[in-house]
Length: 501
Ligand code: SIN
Image 1 (spheres, rainbow, N blue to C red):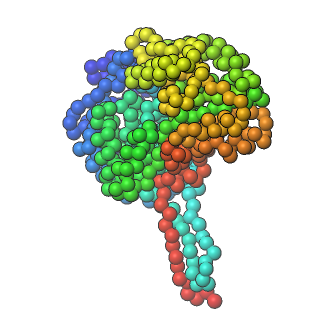
Image 2 (cartoon, rainbow, N blue to C red):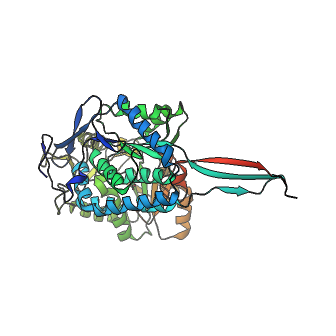
Image 3 (cartoon, rainbow, N blue to C red):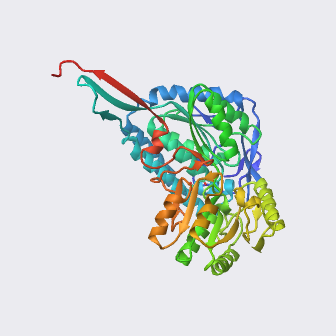
């Protein structure tokens, strides 16, 4: 592939046309008005490998107008054609799986096997929402008067904006964009500064699939200009919907900014998710499931296991087995086939992990393995870490860790575990492991979260409504009806009927 700008690409692609590093607006590759750029860094080496435009508020209007112009015609495209476009996009993403995985590894740091996993999870969304496009339906009601007819239709609500995180950049773009495009909306995506290249590759493939110019637009920017660009999108009159995945702090800002023009908002926010493992669980099943959940992308998922509660009868045995597994993790660059855990994606992720671990240690927690930054090839590595003796006053119990640090807490009774698990302002996902069906059902009802994993550490799938309660946000992405509904308005029709005796 050779040089891109002043950087040496650290990989080669089978399909070099996939690689773009300008914004995508109205079907064209464009610079920002300022002409300024920022660097995208490989977290596995700490080295920049490509640059992208720094867009700011002055770049927003063109993109929104392009999306709005397109919306005027795209809204009338038949649901079957929208489904066919989504299927074509889906096919092209699958065809380019290898190259997309390579880019993903160099943006996020995740191991190649996980990158494939993310792409396979993500095409679930293009496939699923292609099906959903033709299943959008209104209703007809039994009227209260003999000459009245009452019904509803669903219509796309207009231009949508997606503010997307860096941890699963392909999945999060597709979960939002495929739903919007299925509904008949057009979209502007603002990817994270860490992961713009996968978003641009997806836009290239959407265009190849036949989506009209302006249907999917990508505005890249750096960390400094992210608040300004996001605010301009949230305030723009022609943007009718904002879907945000990220921190609770920023989610509240987004909701506030969108309230002025009463935009519809979906917020997928922080997790601090608990896992509760009972004495009667299948230990091997619980270990495999929670381990995969915790160490997926080095612990950088909103739905990851933040606090692991284990009942006293199996606590020591579980912790011992878990620690032995953690010691087997092979940390390295995601492109190395022997790597089982990559770096964290940002340098600030290391600092946060270190401060959480240090706080826990200073308040009496026990570190069984790991606990500090790992110097390796200049990348952002943190040792896979296991800590027990976690107390509610420790920062690590209250905040999302977003690093490969697992924390263990012993409990005795079901009531005690439920109370502790729910003792958080968040409510994204909770997980429980038991073979007692009565207890399982009680936990399903009593754990305060939008998603409950029962004897599983993986409840994310295109068919499953994804979303939290409490300060983890509102709205659902993926799943039947609910996700596309986030991009639709309901219009009620009332008709006075003459001539029907
Ligand atoms: C997230 O953690 O932000 C999303 C993870 C998922 O979709 O499973």
